[in-house]
Image 1 (tube, rainbow, N blue to C red):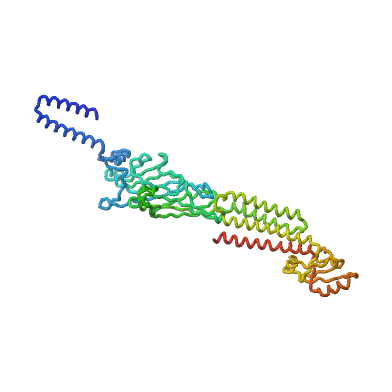
Image 2 (image 1 turned 120 degrees about the vertical axis):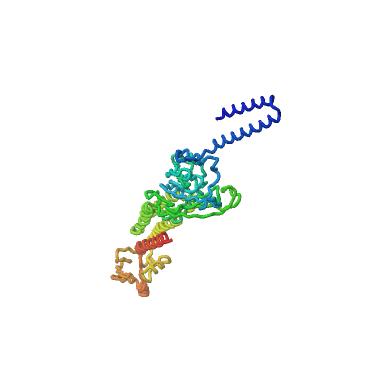
Length: 496
């Protein structure tokens, strides 16, 4: 097409030179103007025919030919957004509405502590572009026109991003992962696979009985709300594959939201123009699967606390056994907890987890302190004089003992309810409040008889008896306090 045109110009130039030599100057000038007009009109006609192909007989065109003619630069500017068309076919200066749908095929928790998750799925954008309507040009074509990622370079596409992304791919995948569908009325549908790594806010104060909310925020990046507004599709806007299996979490439910947010002028994130931008988001509600932690940490820690109480059934003078039992359970608890503490060493700790750890540590440490207390009493050489055999007077006499002189009454041994005091056989009643003498020593001095008469209301307990009495009380008090601690702890866990 170009070669005949060049030859034609060459002939015109030669003809002009010949006429200049033969014909007068005015005639040549007039002839040159006519020839130039003819050349310009011919060139314009050729360019018009070449640059803007006609849409006549569009029914006979293939879908590739039809879409390429519709998106030809002579009638379609891919940098201009589509404007809504009113009922009278006039164009309204209103923002373009973009309807969004998402289908999530999988959610992977990358980091369970920082709640970094990766979502896989499909994103669909649907909007109207009247410039692509081919129904009036090809009335017999009822099927939509399909295309792939190559068509993205010829049409207008809204610029959207995941605002809380760490890494994502939208409309940038391979050809097989993008599907474009153009309906006869100009409705355009773009479907693409998405893979986005999102960072979610995390609260670990109730770990491992916490629940998390992870949101994906989609925003219009290039166009503000005066040009583009994002909407969730009215029908099935968010679908999640029911067969998704999450690690460490259970997906409970999800919801979505639409909003307009304001930015300042000069914000690099939004093309420096400022103004209001359209944003949509969807949130998934996740609860941590605490069954693993219950069997892996909480039940073993309860067992360690229970094992530390075995020392209450050992005699107070069994120092190696009781010391080894207390320290080994304490070290085992520290080792068990350290595996989880490493996960939070650079983060704000989980308060409920720490409360449980310090509670178990307190009870194991308390059993060690109880052993130190009864062992100290056991090693005394003096009997204790008690006004009554009950908790108040035993602890009072233990902490500030009123001892009986060793020259008068010697150390005692215990054997059930029978007590041996300086050769005298005594029987302790069931209420442990009175001790009666069954057989008196004939050599007891008159001075001691007078003191005994004046102290008839007082009872006597040996250090061994006091130690055994404290151990018996600890067997009941420690489990009771641990049950109360559990009741309060689990009430706060599930009620707050």
